[in-house]
Image 1 (cartoon, rainbow, N blue to C red):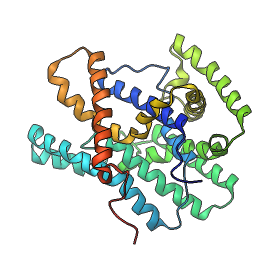
Image 2 (spheres, rainbow, N blue to C red):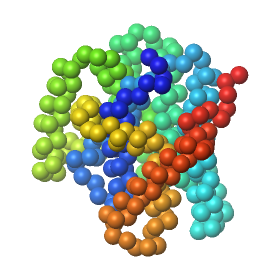
Image 3 (cartoon, one colour):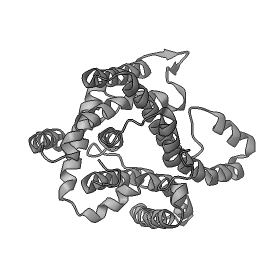
Image 4 (tube, rainbow, N blue to C red):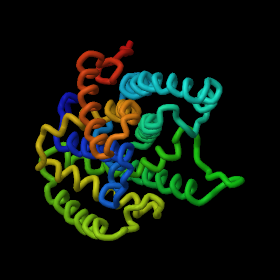
Length: 308
């Protein structure tokens, strides 16, 4: 499969998730209609498109270009802002803290990087697809169980640099890899219809009442199944939405990095929250497009570091 091929429905789904995330950060409204799938969908899509590289070096350089460099570049302004607002030492201590990020959204990039590293190791040493799927599911379940059950001196047993989150997310990557052929190749419509039907059963009650299935603090199996069912059904549904929405998904990681700065810029204006949401969304998309066009290397669209 060519890396240049894009799947509009998947980009549209990713874009819709990004619109919800911006809404979280501007309006602050969480609903059971969205909270079950918004973050899981990114990890499922990661699984759908995962490709085992020929070596760890190749994988590391590619992720350095697409994840680390954009994250580092767009974290610098937040570092400078923090120095002016909180002082140098406080900022430095926050940077050194493995459980926090100077640029809040960077946690997702660190977590994504862990997912690629963990997945690379699993694929390198486990060649049976069924055992590989089982290993990813077990890792996810064990990580979620430990972090939600055990504590040490009042602190949950959570690995630094969001590694625990990445381990839990491996369950979604496993599902993404499992359904890959249904989304990237023709056929498989029957399973997509079943997924859509199951999604309707879950989503409709959650829109009427406070459905506990869609809460992250519930048990792991509910978290995994609801996130997967809703995400896969949404991807299928997005096949019927305008393809023009795919541009948001194409720039989704760039939008994630940039939009907090737009939020900061307009916050002194004290605008209506929904007007603010519209301004932040449109401005972020425009800025993302301009950066993609003129500075693609720092945005992860072209390699800054070449493979030797």
